[in-house]
Image 1 (cartoon, helix red, strand yellow):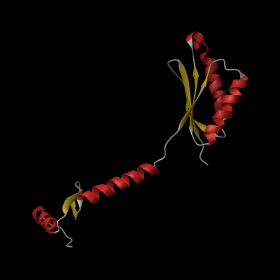
Image 2 (cartoon, rainbow, N blue to C red; image 1 turned 90 degrees about the vertical axis):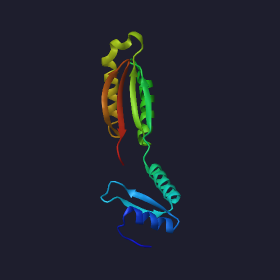
Image 3 (tube, rainbow, N blue to C red; image 1 turned 30 degrees about the vertical axis):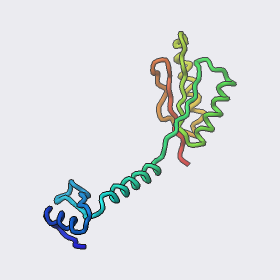
Length: 147
């Protein structure tokens, strides 16, 4: 096989002679880089490479825990144990306090509850987003610490 810089017509002639396709590898280069090969094989290998890259990409799992503004201690401890398990498994945690009806007047209690949770889980995860009120929810994100 001949290697070198050819004008377009000669490159096409070489490709036709070998009964293959002239494939443009990097069009932004000066001059554009082309290769004589089977185009179907090229597309197949490109898809295969993309599939491998996609399978190696990490998938972020987000687990949610819902509290009320007046959640009592037993329920809080129960949900905190679940939060610990989620963080140990490597999932992100979305803890939120849901305010129903007039319970929105207890915004400060909801924030205290979420900050208490963050403080008790600080050895397992770090706070990614501090408690923030969005509509009727006060949301906080906790990401697991790397091992």
